[in-house]
Image 1: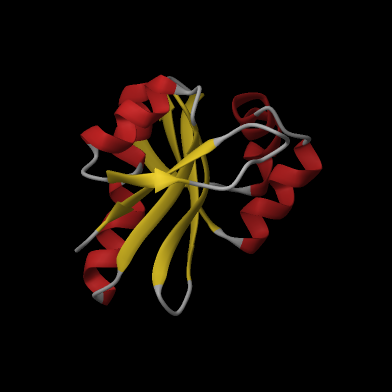
Image 2: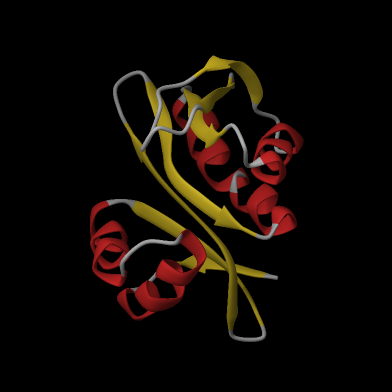
Length: 127
């Protein structure tokens, strides 16, 4: 599995993975740090994140669980290098992504906000 920076040409494949419009994913590539996991020219996962004053925030991620676990190392590594914590939200019903977050070292810290009526769970990684 190759992990690399996302490029604008990945927007369509990111949209399919993240169930979002291609234009939204194109903007994501421009506005955030976005890393992708690829196997044989197929994208199998992605993570986007940005740093704020208090923590590194994972803004979106999706894909195969093993790819997601590997990709979550990217914001975690950045957080460690900056002496910051890392945080992310997962839809409560996405058990495979919750497990990938836990396997990547994040710990569940409680409920998050609702998105489109769906409950989320907040995870945090102290570095």
